[in-house]
Length: 328
Image (tube, rainbow, N blue to C red; front, top):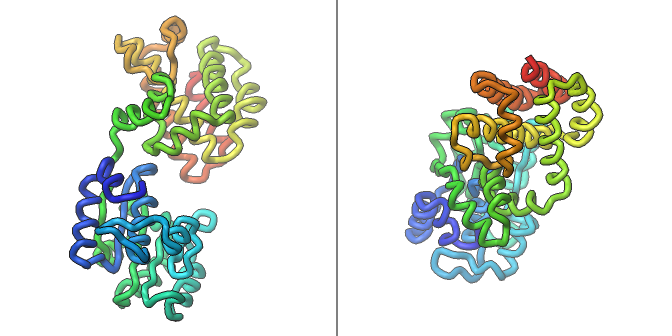
């Protein structure tokens, strides 16, 4: 998203609120931008930063080509600081270092900005340190905090920010944009069910690792339908060898959810709702192996498995447990 009109296409309310502030020269000293992954948080934060530092603004939009805009894009601007979780959290040392940076004058102007990704992961000490920062705002300092989990943000922090709520993207709108880029109907349907992010959807559709992941999901579901005793061997010898990282396993569980949803949709007579399988013969064969009650239970088990992953349960244990539940 390069301009506020681009933002308005997918987040019209957020675009209107922020551009009104820009027009009135009343950009907030602190924003809390909250929304699910792929709804445009980083792009909006980057645009706000560009507006603050751009050398040749055109109305509410940055020029995108000046030195400041290019360095913000590359995260190389000396007065725009990005803070991201180190491991599972943002630690107090990171905030102390940020505050130290802000004791110096801006290198190119008096304006400074900091963007905190995953603000919900601030440790208690780090959150309290940020709170002090927000309580004594410098006129030339802008804070932008990004989160997928606004409930984890201290109420005292929220109260000192202008909260921007981002809406989930419309899957149909994303699917149409994917079709416009040249994706097939089947791929566009699957990608728009997996992510809200256009760039991520295109990247996944071209990724060899993801193509192999789809094959493994089909093979695992077929192993379940065959009531095979080899399912645990498959998990250890193939599945865990491919889904090595926690984020990869989460994606594998997302694909399994879509696959079992398709089987359920076929059973209740809405085949056109399927997004993972594209052959009704295969769905019919798989549907014979599960009752509707069992399919609903499997979907619940897969959702619980995703929760356990987020709670840092060991990935192999998560897969072993959900495999046992599906086999019962």
